[in-house]
Amino acid sequence: MDLEPVIGLEIHVQLKTASKMFCACANVSDETRPNTAVCPVCLAEPGALPVVNAQALALGLQTALALNATINTRVRFDRKSYFYPDLPKGYQITQFHLPVGVDGTLAYDVDGQARSAAIERVHLEEDAAKLLHRDQATLIDFNRAGTPLLEIVTGPVFHAPGEARAFLEELKLLLRAIGVSDADMEKGQLRVDANVSLRPAGTNELHPKTEIKNLNSFRAIERALTFEVTRQAALWQTGSPPDAASTRGWDDMKGETVERREKEAAHDYRYFPEPDLPPIVYAQQDIERLQKELPELPAAKRTRFGRLYLFTEGDARVLTRDHALANFTEQVISELKDWLKTEDPKSRGATWQVHKREFTKLVANWLINRLVPLFGERGQIVPGKVTAENFAEFLTYVWAEEISAPAAQEVLTAMVETGADPSNIIDERGLRTVKDAQALAGIVDRVLAKFPKQVAEYRSGKTPVLQFLVGKVMAETRGTADPKIVTDVIVHKFQ
Ligand SMILES: [Zn+2]
Image 1 (cartoon, rainbow, N blue to C red):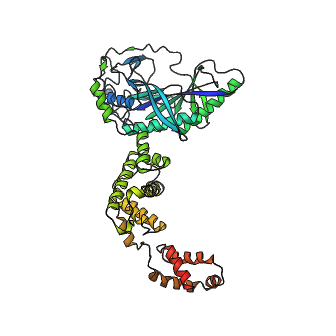
Image 2: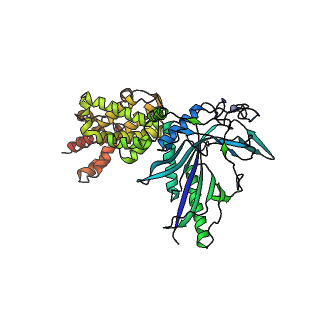
Image 3: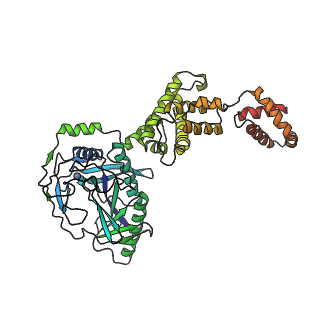
């Protein structure tokens, strides 16, 4: 039987607000001393009343707008009742009936193929406290209690683990671009639950789903989904597909999903409107203002980098992945354009319009393959050390072939370490390519004198030996000689 996976995602995003969702406590990180950012509201003391965080509302609304959702101009909070030690109120304040936004979409691509995923809803809610299990005891840290969360729920729209992963990677870029969250999965800022079921290919019915929890990296998501699809396929093949919804956890060490008893299993949440918070009505102009304040979204930026600068799709993707890197790239290009306007003889009359593709290639190559790796794995541009101006100037030397490839690498490394101007480094270390045939002739003579055997071989017609001699001269000049001129000088000696 041909089976098709059906996958839907529920994503919780920690919002980067100054304070908590319904009180003035600081929205602090895990590193803060436990139970220091607390007050009667987030500790659920009797009589304490919540107040909605306007910044969280704005961030939620902007995310919904960026996801092309239909905005509810009237939103409301609801109580979701359940009992658990991490929730002292006995209910969580969330949005059930009137969420921030519904029916959105997010375009993404899988292996170069464009897709669009349907988003069912975007809503705001509060996080629960954190439980720490130690030996026989359980400790509770209320710093996280009441911090703002945005939940994004997709439809059952993914049909392969790789699709779900590609979607999440795009969503992460979007959240970071808008600045609503750092969306670091390892830090729990982006938490994903995945619902998986299978169905015979070509049918549309949905079958009982399994919810997988505890997915804390993109890799884990793809592995867990792949495992679960295989597990369920085996059940289908034996004629006993899952007949009820279930919850499973992901064991990353074992590489398998494990059945779990859930605190909410078979629960009636008894949703009802939160009586302590009045409904909120947005003015159309507020929504328009937030829409206008949205920065350029990742997909649009990638497209622009391709169209405007002619970066390849892959290069555009890498260069726009990080906001600082994208800005740096554009500054470098702007500096190069200015340089071309100066009619520096070293530009050999190149113009931006005619040579755009070559310069773009130069920028992408030296930025992606050389400069970014020097900044370490994070791939971030460290402000101040290498300025866009200095990097652009460095590229003009490479373009003019005034420094060789190994010398260029040395210059760049020194720039990253010291922040110095490339021309100073080149001059101080004598790295400028020697193109003067007369200056090279003396060195060539010295080298040839050291290798009489090879010289004799060359004379007798063994031409490949020329490469060896050129290499020796290059080594003698520490790579600063122009290899074409060195070759000419040697050949000339034997004529
Ligand atoms: Zn509080």
